Amino acid sequence: MEGGIVYGEGMKGKVMDYGTLTEDLDSLENIQLQNVKEVTIYVLEGDDIIEYVKGAEIIDELIHLDTSQNYVVKEFTIPNMATRTFGHSKKTYMLREINGFRYILPVVKKHKVVGMPYKKHILIGFEIVMKDKGILYDGSLSRCFVVNRKCSQTMSETIVNEFTEKQFVQFVEDILKTLIDIQKLDVAHGDIKLDNIMKCGTKYELIDWENNRLLEYSFIIKHRYIGLSPLYFKMAYGPAWYPTFKVALLKYFRETGGYDTYTYSRYATIMVEEYMKWFDKYSSEEILEQVKYSLDLCAFGMILYGIMLRNPNIKKSHHAFIMNVYKMRDASTALKLFRNHKTRKL
Image 1 (cartoon, rainbow, N blue to C red):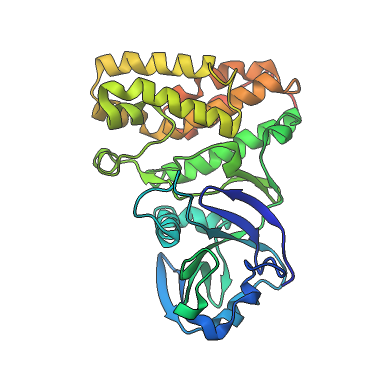
Image 2: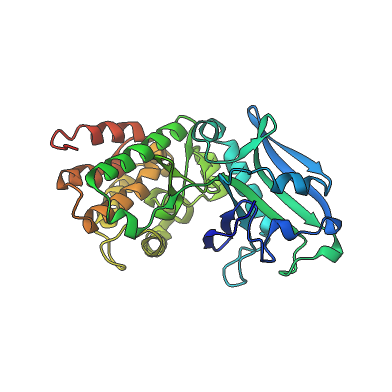
């Protein structure tokens, strides 16, 4: 289980080889069993995620599961005081992601990106609770992980800027097919950006499901769910939705590259203008019923728009599709429209 590669590090954690960082304090292999109080594992059994509390002895079993080095772990960290949310801990971040999987278990099973084989089931994640004398270097008493299949490539501007037309078509098809799968469950991903799309084997896959939410009006209102959609901001902030949405767009531009410039997006402007017409005509609840399945398409459309602007290999015949993707009722409708480009030849 020699590992060591860190694939990405964000505000709430880092993704690294399963087994990991053998010469670092972060290494699972460096944990002293006598300092471990207990280990809680989260396993996908049938149609549910089951929680089991185990003794320290399971540590050795866990770190030797991935003999083929096919998996990575996302270890959660506590953000610094400037960015952390009050009351959140490593465990709350882990549980939020694990609970997000509950909404999409059929998708988890089908795409096999989350979890790894464990006996007859799938290991989703685990928390290692330390004894007082085993306190970690960051002052906490536990380490929290989610297990994912190792993917070969995280999407970035440098990658999508070099897409061939054929790669672009597959990219669009794979993500729309995944959105079709989750929309059948009445769920939105809620955080679609280049950082959350990876090349896994021969497919482009969505990752990072901690922000997924049920597409029910009462659920969205209760949880103040904010996705990259003018509708969500209108529901959460009322009259103040527009300036708040613009701030979120700027943050999104920095994260994903779906932009014209860092201060202005023609795509976002057109999208907002369209929604404002709907806001004048319908209530938020009525609008949600009309467009709830297209909410993820708002963010995905901005990604595609940025790729089209920067990549000369992408045919301009996609322009009409990209500029209208957020208007599509659902991902299935969007996929049909995308495939109807008679001028596209691979």
